[in-house]
Amino acid sequence: MRRHLRTVLVVAVVFALILGAQATIFGAELVILHTNDVHGRLVSFEDGEAELGGLARLATVVDEIREQYGKSVLLLDAGDAIHGTNVVNLFEGRSSIEVMNAIGYNAMTLGNHDFNYGQEALLERMAEAKFPMLAANVTTEAGETFAYSALVQQFGELRVGIIGVSSLETPVTTHPNNVVGLVFHDPIEVAKNLAVRIRPEVDVLIALTHIGYLEDLKLAEAVPEFDVIVGGHSHTELEEAVEVGGVLLVQSHEWARNLGFLRIEVEDGQIKDYEQHLIPITDAIEPNAKVMAIYNGWEVLLEEKLNQVVGSTAVFFDGERANVRTQETNLGNLIADIMREATGADVAITNGGGIRASLAQGEVTVGDIYTVLPFDNTLTVIQVSGRDLLAALEHSARLYPEQNGGFLQVSGMLFAVNPRMSGKRIFNVRINDEHIMMDKLYTVATNDFLAAGGDGYEVLQNGTIVAETGLMLRDVVVDYFLKHGTVEEPEGGRIIFLK
Image (tube, rainbow, N blue to C red; front, side, top):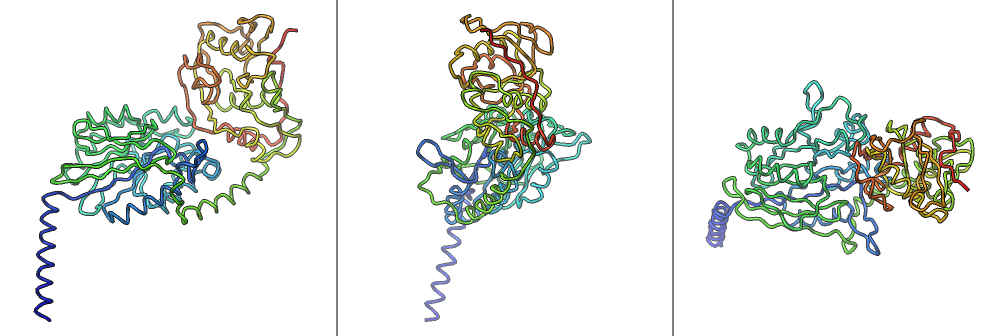
């Protein structure tokens, strides 16, 4: 019996040695799971008749893959994770960090919208995270690093290096106040310098970027030291990995619609083989119970937050559908004024169709403002010529007196409308008490929907983006009420219709 046991043990040892030899020959494996541009989608969202995406269901898939591959699994996020939905925004991203901690992320890079709450709040989120947030190309003006530059860690049999870089455009794609005193250096140059230093120390080197797909292509060409680039910012859905000079590029779209899966086999510091695909996160996947418990707790706090009184109104503010879509209203004027004040733009325009309720006289809660502005529109500043601005005003009034969701509520200008003149209804446009000049460039505060040509405003796409603040318009209005307390009726008489 003992002799038989010894024989079994010897066979087991020999078999283990054979497997070890095969691992050396065929290489060790690393499974890279990745998300990007989640934008606070902790749970699924409606897309037609289906519920898709969200970290709760994605967490279930992550757990299953970890059960299969064990310590060889690495979970990464390529930025813009902690801003985007009410349950996240109203708590400055704390709910996102708690969920990401529960799922077990290993690292993320800082996206431009992760700066949306300002540096102090972001530093607090970084301290709460059980994983490093990377941004090698972001420093203070004194040259001190703002976040971690890189991570080197053992995963399974492989030593893995991860370098994170953020978008060079961050100062204009978040509110400029959020990045005062920070310097965003060339991400490709910074990544190159770090990669040369780290490459000899690791078996696999990964770039975790929030610079967009086109910049990732440039990065792959410039820094062949990388094995893999996990990207974000452009919301690109790469069904297949893109190979550039031996560097694999992956990106998984947005809102946790997919979980990116990349399994690589590595031998002597080289990728010998790989398997890559996107795993759709659908309502066929059961939400993770732990994540749902965290989310439900924050939902209770959200309900309390929505009931918070932020100020009051001195008068009734008119947001009735028939009015905001056909004429100037005091609520439309107020919202446009808030947009212009928040950005310092020459003028502000917003579509009446984005205003969905009135504000009664008296106390105003966060929920009241969210009812007025229910869409996820963000505050954007563009620069357009007087000619294009005039064309936008013509587009606004083209259907009058019919209701039109694209009818503009304005600030910083006044003009007259002659309904009898088709195609040339707008005249006597004045900006800052001066007649509009066709070739002059004006800064226009608007929302991202209109800036992208929504409601037929393609003419606004002729302009250039000055700032994509990433700030929800409704949150900007909440902040205004908190600052001013009792809000008075703004001056009217901005749009005059000839009879």
